[in-house]
Length: 538
Image (cartoon, rainbow, N blue to C red; front, side):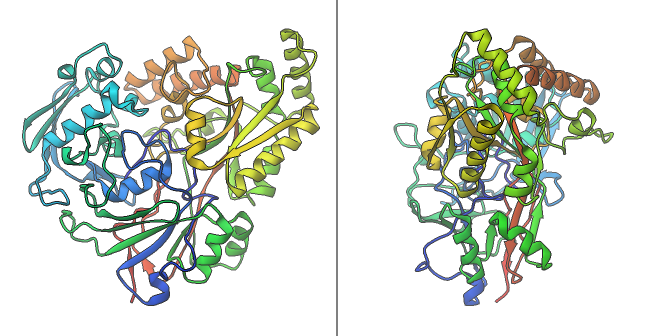
């Protein structure tokens, strides 16, 4: 299973908003009796197919079909060798020598070598690439210095020993090294797939892949079709094609599944979830997630330059109403940033042992708002616009919050939405006062959430800065004792909610419908479905 870590901006592939194609599109295999073609859905066009650039879940989902990493996650959440045959680790855990499997090939038949990994990883770190994901490689020696222009490419701890052997030198020991290297950020690339402007070629005739599938066709805003990679090392892949249909409306997708246009539906309309559960539909699947839906403040834009105003807006949100009425209990109320699920080897759950940071308290919210306005000398609150992505469910939540702010704070806010790709650009530019975002990932580690707000990192779109918070995050990154590490991260989250750079809303779970004729799809916590082993009865 490909992990697409960090900026997994929840579109969402497997939660509430789904997609499908036009009815004139070819019928799904379940409806035609075909056993080699699966039709499923995504909610928008991928932002990109370049893992160095991709920061959204839709892109990560498709990239995961086309490319493979050194390691992969199995159905039990364990990490297994993918392109790696074996690895050797030095005594202090700072050098990993990774031997590649023999006879692994690109889709054009050429051999995959250690040079392809070195090329891809250093390209991602190259400042000219402009990757928002580069910080995920900072555990590699010299990576941060090179990426920030303070070091040279030759000083990066990525070394080709021979065509089949890659040596990776770390800044410090990393307990979760296989988890990190299983990410789509660490795939290799064929140089022939990169053009003269350092851009990934996306023409199916030019894109060379190494995953279970290759790109067959991309009809923007309609569908993406991938086909079996005949050169892929794992011969257990049986599907010849997967079609990902694109429509950002969950009700339409649901109807197409019911009319046998889709074999696998990622995400259900909220009003249909309870109905499917009540009738005991065996096609219904629910998978726990490690995702957080939030509204982020830009702390450099008024009125959210004031911490009391930020806290007031958070206390004015009735999360119970959102979960019960809008999500039909297919989510958990979020009173912190890190969800349940991140545990130590001894079983300590990060969220459960710490509890909540926020609550629904309209009276306190009103009081804090008045205090914050007085501190700033504002007789009236500066105008506020809440931004969100075009999606039926997100619209419902935004409208509900608009009403809550009016009722509980006496504040009228404006709503503004954009289609997904445009919205990502807006968010990355920090062009918002208050904006929706979803953060996910299959690495069940509190730091994957908290690090998003650290220092001058590329994902700190809220522009929030706290030196003590940053120091705790940096210390936690190198701490090898699990219990001590949790304590550091608890302190960091304490500081975060003292200053309130975000409003936690819900911790969502994922809902699917899978035709009874489909088998072999793997559903893993925090990840998109793994489709490579899917089979369809003829």
